[in-house]
Length: 120
Image (cartoon, rainbow, N blue to C red):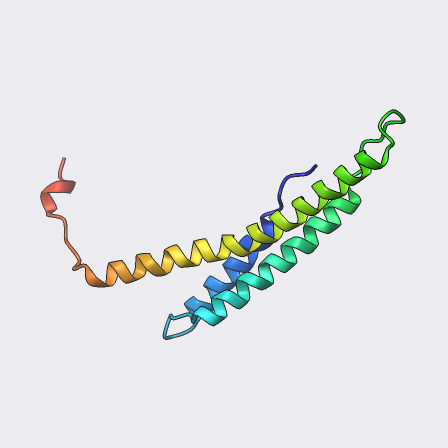
């Protein structure tokens, strides 16, 4: 089974951060963040489904039973569902942590380092 794809959520997160940076208010609503995360998860699930279709499955004449086919279908479903969850959680985690960090930094005063720190 291939690894979970994470390229699409990272690209979607980059697009979201870029659109926030272009916006003069530099704010993002929870509704927009949730929508973008859901879109990212669905795109990631679609990519996982296509990767799973294009990846050749190992075949063996000894294991051609209905049990092995059921196990393979179950593992495919787990792979796709975990890809969707990863696609949803990656943008939420990245942008959520950035929002918390920016809120925490607003309350702090800027501290300047003394010039003696940079002297040799």
